[in-house]
Image (cartoon, rainbow, N blue to C red; front, side, top):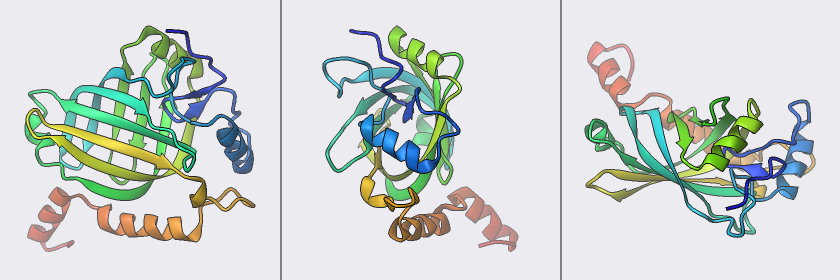
Length: 216
């Protein structure tokens, strides 16, 4: 496998040649030119499957296990990638309480100094993802501390019940941006606010608050 070109997009949703000071319209142009915006290697197959491990926090609690990441590019996307999680034995009871969903959120991804990367879904949870491939790790180290926040449409699927396996599909789409300003469209923003209203408190907090009589 060829090593990844750090000037190409990366699996955190980042491109190492995009300056932090670049305005959103400039970043959008860079994202379109560097399509698909994922942690991809300079390999022949841009949809190659990469193995990883993860630790994170979900609405049901802390989880960990093994995972894969895979780009699923298409002409209607700036970036589209899948993050599939298989939970370890300790996390399985927690994973069993996670339900499939679809929602809109601002996803923040960042390359870390140790070669891992974060994917933070503010309305849902967060993950630290550790790739196994040495070139993948090296590219993340080279990219650190670059980060990006992307308005996304997120689908969470249950792939298998035993062992518990879930899959996130992250989609960043040109139709969600106003070209002239680089800001999100009114439609995306409305969907995001609907997601915020529904997900701003997780189930356990709602139950606790209901019992206390303070929040519902």
